[in-house]
Image (cartoon, rainbow, N blue to C red; front, side):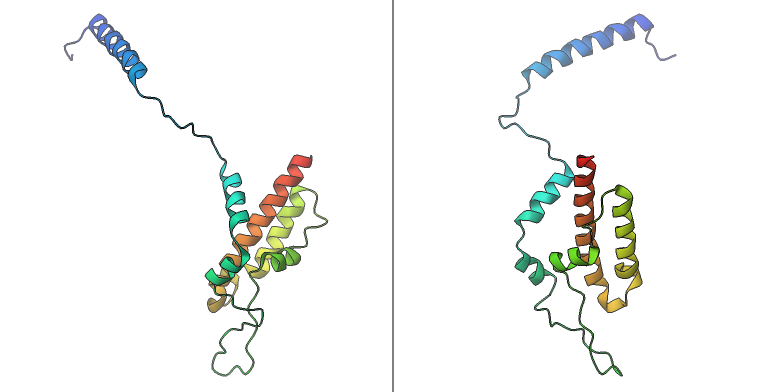
Length: 149
């Protein structure tokens, strides 16, 4: 077939494995040990370190009185939904939630009113931010509830 007998192939594999074991011992080990951080923990740490005024600046929120530019034919502009985590937490009303199904219900209710696919086009970027913040808060509280049992 291919010119190798079973015993020749076995001998070749044994030689390669023996050579590989010697090479593994000669490899340099890293001088700095690396720990594993779960993605959830990394996000939590990052979120704690971001000042709220930076978040407001990045997402263009200058004040609570900020309004949407009025479209032709609309006389009074509507206020923009807040991206402040405290305001979003108040909207979520998670104080009485205890079980995973409670948090799932809260997530669905918030998404029903705030999902980017359900808002007018000029509010979609803000809706994305609001959903991200809400999902992060709900996930954090859901993990805490699961840890409590």
